Amino acid sequence: MTTENDAARLLLWINAQSEGDILCAVSAADRYDAEWYHFSEARVIMLIEHLANRGLVDNRGTSASGLECRITPAGVIEAERLSDVRDNPRRRFDFAADALVAAAMELYPRARVELGTFVGTRHMWFYDRVLELDEVQRAVDHLEKAGLAMVERSPVQAQAVTLTALGIECGSHDKVSVRNFLNEHNQQQPSVQNEFKVTVHGGAPQIGTNNVQHNTFGYDPQQLASFAREVLAAAHTADVPEEARATVLADAGALQAELAAAEPESSRVRQLTERLLQSAKQNLPALGWTAAAQIVAGSMDIPLF
Image 1: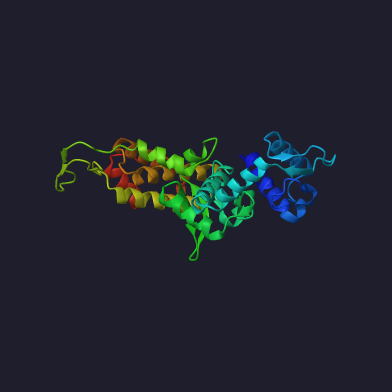
Image 2: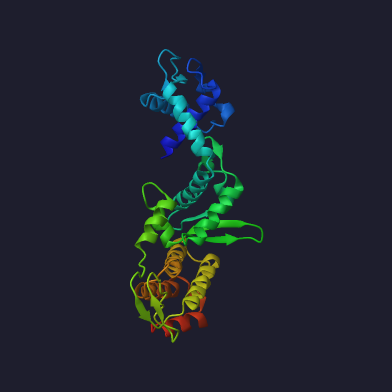
C-alpha cells in the first residue's frame, strides 16, 4: 500500500498546485516546498507514470525530465474523493490504528514501537496530511481496549505500544485493517442463543434465550489477568535478550487477549496459562516464582517444575 498511498499524496498535491485546472502544467520539481524532500526524483517520476497509467494525470508533451504533468478530469474527481476520505474522522481513526499496528510489525518479533519515534515516520502521513497527536492517542487507547496492544504510559500520556499475540495476528495480514480484523474475530467468538440452565461457582442459575454465560470453569480470571500483568512488568524491565523478552510479551499478550474475549475458551485459557508459566520460567529467571505464579499454577494443577 505504500505506493498507492504515495501516489494518492502526490495526486492531491498536483490538484492543489493546479487548483483543479486540467490545462495547468505542474512540475514536481517543486516538491521540496511540499515536504517531498525524502522522495528521490526517480521515485516521483515513477509515481507520475503510475498516475498517468491510471488516467489521473497526463504527462505527454510536458518536460522531458518526467517531473511535469497535468491533472485530468478523472484525476480531479479522484483527488476530491481522496480529500473527503482524508478529512473523514472515522477514516482518520482507522488509519491511525492501522498505522500503529503496521509500525509495530516492522519491529517484529518484539513488535514494540515508541510513540516518540512513531510520530516522526511516514506512518503519520494520511495521504497529504499528518495525523494529530490526539488522534494517535485515541487509536492507542482503542488498540489497548481491544486486546491488540499493551501500552506503557507516563503520568501524562502513552509512551510505547507493544502488540499482543492477537495484535501480531492482525498485523500479519497483507493489508492491515484493525476494524475488519476485530469484526471477523468477534464473529468467531461463540455465543449462546438457546435456552439453557447453568450454575457456575455456586452462583444463581440463568434461564432464558439470547444470554451469554461467562463461564470460567474453575479458574479465576482476575487472578490470571493479574499474573499476566506481573509477568509483563517483569519482561519490560528484565535484563534479558530481546528475543526472550519478545517471547514472554507475546505469551502474556495471548493470555490477556483470551481472557478479554466475550466468551473465553477454558481449554485455551489453560493452554495459554501453562505456556506463559513455562515461558516465564525459561526467560525470566529473576521473576523468582512469586506467590502469584504458585497460586495460578496450583489452582489450575499445572506443575511448575
